[in-house]
Length: 289
Image (cartoon, rainbow, N blue to C red; front, side, top):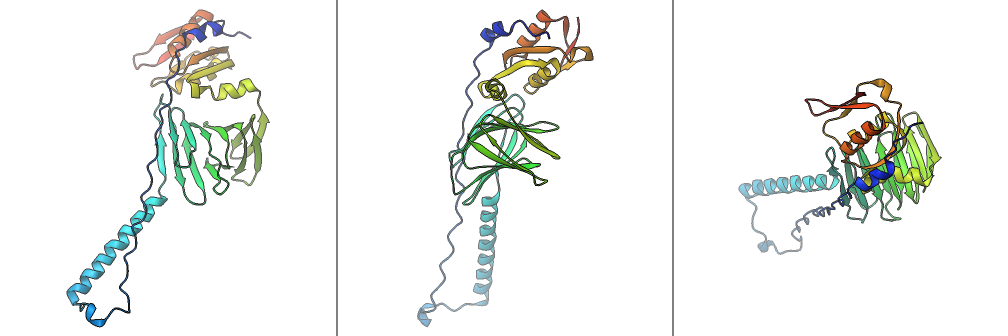
């Protein structure tokens, strides 16, 4: 099996990834205090007579206050949305101390209340470092399943045909939509599909490769050229395209910065008979040399 001979040399060319920027969530404003009602024990002469015009004014004020209170409570229930564009990465810290790192092209919603902390991962990939809180479980809704923890560290990646969960610390439970459930401990990965839920053990190297994106790297270890191109395309505005299907099964290994696809392409031409052709739309075509 051929592999790229430049793996060691490529390490020295990779720039250090920039640190992920953090941001704090703002506190949700509390509901306004309810108006204090007049006491029934007040003397009669202390109460001004209520005219028709005054009654209409009171009803209008009550209606406005009711609508304002309803909107405030509705806002309390609305989740906070976090997203990254293609090629972007960011880090968010929730009010409970939980840290969430978002990889490229990721979309998620968060909502914290007095009984539960809930996240909906709608697209992309995220690493969760969950602050422990025995009173409020942390739940990640991924559509086909729910992941529930008290305090741990794990990575979730949404792929077109499956979801990959990788646990690096602690213990999580996974409940699928069809009623299946499993537990995954540190070093385990769970494969989640609508009709399937299974766990397996990963070696330390596999765990590190799966979360290497947090340090700004793509780790390849006997991956097919097709798999490697898919990884780089996650961070590119214009894709690398394999136009000759005979190239797809080539096996490649190496370590590159997530934004260093040019170095990857240079290594391909040095190691294999591959022609790299820039296209007018900004994409890159790979064919046999």
